[in-house]
Length: 185
Image (tube, rainbow, N blue to C red; front, side, top):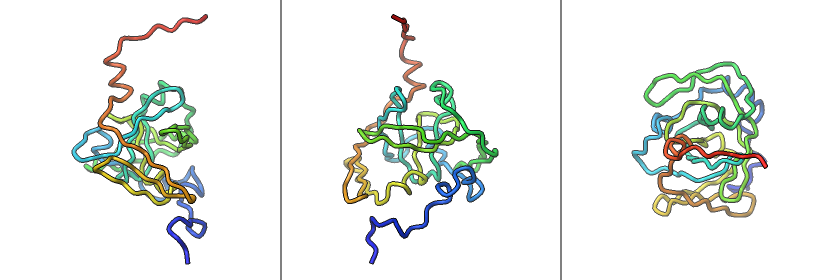
């Protein structure tokens, strides 16, 4: 008998078997709310670090894949992998073109470093969206919406991630903060 934590018999998702062809397997989807950064319902948002930058991450099962704001990828100088252009489906039916993928991007979320594959899209109000593509890899997840916690019960242990109230994205913080001068010593 298999337990809920035993994924050894579970077929890996298409994007793990051939990361370059996941867009051939099924259409990428992202909710209009995630794309626009609009919060009309409770969402799990977390402060995280991507390289040396503080970012806002939303974990959302309404998105098929993981996404990163295109402007943030440019600001961080992330190494991109060009992929065959495809259209991500937005919940309102409007297509959103995508042709860039970023593999093994290190995101540190409350002391745990994740290496995730991200697709570049213009996001507003968010820096990163971790969708079903990431949720698939972590196994059993329990959300407590009242306490804003996401519990991951995998590999015989438990990790509890504490969600935050809405926080400013990198773009919003840049607009609010005056430029900082950096000097070499």
